[in-house]
Amino acid sequence: MSRFSRAKKVHGQTVEGRRAVLESLRAGREIDHLIMVEDQELGAQLREIVLLATEAGIEVQAVSQRELDSQSHTKKSQGVIAIVPDPRYHEPEDLMLMAENGDQPPMLVMLDGIQDPHNLGAIARTADAAGAHGLIIPERRAVGITPGAVRASAGALEHVKVSRVGNLNRTIERLKELGMMVVGLDADGDVEYTEADFTGPVVIVVGSEGKGLSRLVRENCDQIASIPMAGQLSSLNASVSAGIVLYEAFRQRR
Picture 1 (cartoon, rainbow, N blue to C red):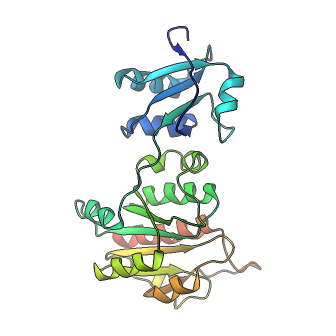
Picture 2 (cartoon, rainbow, N blue to C red; picture 1 turned 90 degrees about the horizontal axis):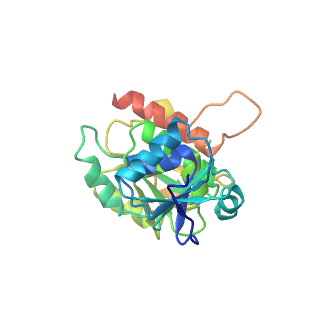
Picture 3 (cartoon, rainbow, N blue to C red; picture 1 turned 90 degrees about the vertical axis):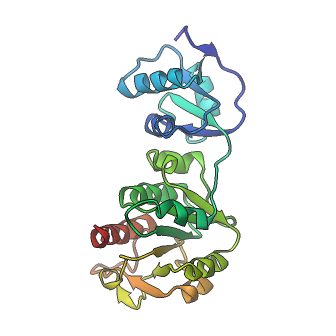
């Protein structure tokens, strides 16, 4: 990689892993520069990364494996890291306006206190696949768009818009005023998830890994939907629950 410049000290957020970096480039995200392990063999993904970066005028810096590892937050960089500005968040109303340009009514996913970046990433990946128009996350006591979440999303967080809000309950009230139905997911639900109506403008609320929906958020939901279970456990992983219900919504909205 002698054609690449030598690395400088990293300042800014990182996107790590070949798929995540590639999706960042494909999405046209602002990237300050890339760092890659020098003299590594370029497979198909790395070649496309270099090509897209070159076309976009993005500097590619060569580093040793040790230096790349020292700058990696996830320790799973797969030989490439993109240095990017801090994540760009959107207003919830903006997510609705973006959705109205399509042929489906808005479908948003609200995360009530998800703290594991892998769960956030997995939910974002499913939300993108199922046609959701954005995620809403709280500012406090919850994970944001971290390098681990971006990597776990396999690049989906480069395509799914995210809103970070100070108060979930006030946001729910605002979205209701705009005509959205709010459906929370909980083991003790009013209806089974297949009986809920996801065909109109809807917000699907997923609770935290340990406590589920917080009390006020649950009370503010229009409906609580449950997933029936036959085994000994009482609940599913948050990202699994979200995936099941998002694909039921996708089925109803097709």
